[in-house]
Length: 417
Image (cartoon, rainbow, N blue to C red; front, side, top):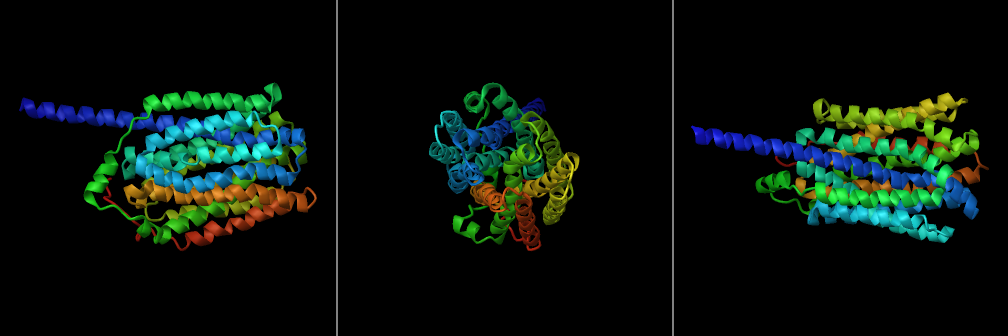
């Protein structure tokens, strides 16, 4: 009897430690995503003084922002595969270390060409992180909790977006754009040390899934319609998200005559709206939308498109910020759902690879959206209306694709995993 109690007590203690560890990992990944977005999005504000210093036009400025996403997109595919093969922890550590190095190197840039090269390398260094962090969620959380866990990390991206603009604007004004990148790079090195000690490897759910079902070959994964549908939908939503994120700071400063600090402060409002949308979506996915996730995607994309139209035609700063907030909230409604679906419906041993493919679609959007918008703005003599119209058209992609989504035929594993 006493032996049985000891066994039960040991199991309870083990479960308690496991539960505690998974939330520690979620917390440190949350912090890592915030730092990731500080490093990545600070360029959207820094490009304003950089363009002045190097005498860049809108097309060149857009290319500097876009070129990061070109290498970042390609690395999504490689990084997802490497994460499945070598584990989430190893790839996260390598990625954070590399992006910190290239963040510092950005501060040493001396020309347009040097910025292009550094940003390309930056994308390679950072490209493994999204898929690896998603795999870390799958390694530490059962399927019934993955929607909320993934939405927590997506929430970190909105917080990173929210504070990066105002922090970058304040630092650029006080210490210059070069020192901004030096500080963020050092922050990344400190994060690498924290991750090394706190991000403990855990393959509990991977091992349980593999013991129940044979591994899914890559060839079979690539034949799944859901993989390509998710990639295409994420591409469409990301065109809007990255287009706005890249050009709204310049639009508000140059077109609406705001100073950089005011622009950064107002940017908090859309980010807060996006954060609320992310948290709400994660809860809905786990509790009420199982098997009906496509309706969340369609709803979010529709809200984004309508809000973009009203933002384009708004006459006051208040209305512009209001509809920008609704646009980003709609985008994050769709994005959170899209990025959670691999954790719900794909075999554990291909989650990293599948996520890498989906992120690839989003980063291709990040690579072309800022450049296309910059070209359209130049083509129409500095007018942003046509560029915003381009974003409205792109919203059609996730709406139409979502109508074809069928989750019941996806690659699944043990439902308790």
